[in-house]
Image (cartoon, rainbow over all chains, first blue to last red):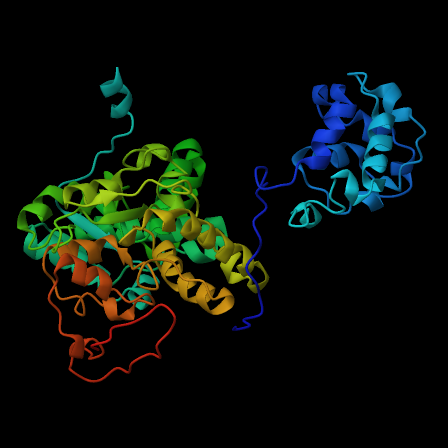
Length: 127
Length: 353
C-alpha cells in the first residue's frame, strides 16, 4: 500500500443498527425512566468528579444508549457515586442506579449471556 | 400549485452571444473539455461565443484558500466584467463552478452593499482606466449545455444506451457545491433538486442513479485538499459517495465542477492504492465532464476529447455506448507524437491500447 503521508478518515456516522445493544437493553430494563432523558446536561454540570477529571455522565449514557461501549469501564470508575446528578435531573432519573447497573453488567460473567466487551467495532473511541 | 412551486427552481439561461471565462485548472485535468464546449456552441449549434485571451483567473482558488483578500477578488472580477463589456457581450458563461459561485457572490454583495461595488469600480478605474457593466445573464457552462440538450440530442450520433442490449446506461450526476448550494436560485432545480446534469442524462437516453449520498460533497473543498493534513477528510468524502453509489452499478459519473470531476476520478486510484478497494464492474467508475459526455453523444473522438488523461479508463463506457475508437491512438498527442503510457493500475485499462 502506498503511504502518501495521510490516511482516509474513518466515518463518524453512528452505526446504530450494527452496534451491539445487549448492555443498552439491560440498562433500559433496569432503569426504564432513562428513556425520558432530554440530554440537558445538568448531571454533567453538577458532577463532582467532572470538576476534577474529564468525566461526562451525559455523554456516557448517550453512548451506551447507542450501543457504543468503548472505554466504558474506565469512565465508570471515575464516578464517586455522590448522587448530586440525581438531585438536579429535571426528569427525576436515578442516575446513580444507572451507574451501579452498568458496573454490575460489566462485572457479570460471560456465562450469564452478556458479552465481556460488546461493541468492539464501536466508533465511540474516535470522538 | 406544483407548477408554480417548480417555477421557483427554474433559471433564465441566455440563448446566444456568450462571453466565456475559462477555468484555471480544467485544461490540465480534462484538456479537451473547454475546446469541446466551444466547438459544440460554435460549430454544432451556431452560437456566438467569445473566448477572450485577455481574461484572467477569477481568484477563486486563492480566495477560498484565504490568500487573496475580498477587495482584490472584487477588483479582478470587475476587470472580467470590463473585458466582457469591451468585447460587446452581456451574457457571461463561466467554465468553472467556483468562478460561477464567486461571480454570483460578488454580484450579490454589490447589491446588498453598494459601497463595495463603488469601491471596486474605483479600484479598477485607478488601476486600469476601465469601466464595466454587470452581466445581464450569468450562467455556468453546464447551464448552457443543459439549455441546448435537446438540440444536442437531435444531432447526436450516440445515445446513453447500451448498444448491445438497448438498456439505458446508468449515470451518477454530481453537482459542484458552489453551483447552487450558495445561491439556490442561481441553479437549475435549486440546491434541493438540481436538474442541470440529470436533464442532460435523460435527454440523451440515460437513466439517473438516485443513491443515498447523491448530494454529498466530493470532499475537495480547497483547504480540505490543499492542506495535506486535511486530505484524509477530503478522500473520506469521496469514499463515502463511492460506497453509497456502487451497489446501484452506475456506468459512469458526470460532474459539472472541475474539482469534483478531478477528485471523483483521481481518488478512485488513491483508494485502490491505500486500501486495495475499487468500485465498479471493470475496476473503476469512469468520471466524465458534461462536455465530454456531450462530445461522445455527438460522436467526437474520445482521444480528441482528452479522455486518455482520465485516471479511470473510459473504454468500458465507450464499448457500452458503441463508440468506435482507435486503441492505438490513445497515447498519441495531437501531432501524432507518443505521449507515454501510464503504468497499469488496479483500476484496469485498455487491453488493446
